[in-house]
Image 1 (cartoon, rainbow, N blue to C red):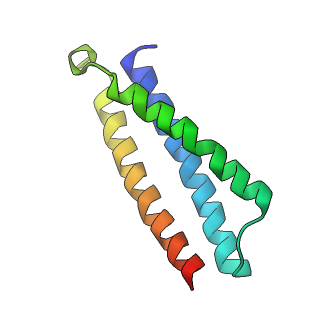
Image 2 (cartoon, one colour; image 1 turned 60 degrees about the vertical axis):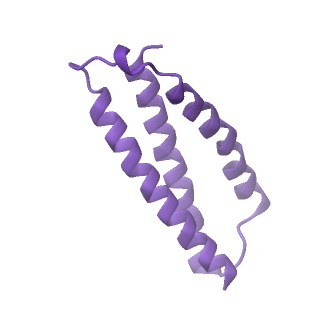
Length: 98
């Protein structure tokens, strides 16, 4: 797998995580209760996938990233998506604590 594919798969996973957190946010706001066990398992399943993806990113060699490809833009998009994930996760946590 080349560097662009690794970063693209990471970004796609971040999109999936973000979608799950948005769904969790809707559940928390509409029902004011903890999401179902099935939903929590779905969320829990994503964590090891995210860990693996981050490990693949760590092992990327910067010198092998093509200056002509889309990799740098994808990295920036993934960083932005991770910030959105962190913000949304914090918001969900605050809702749960109320």
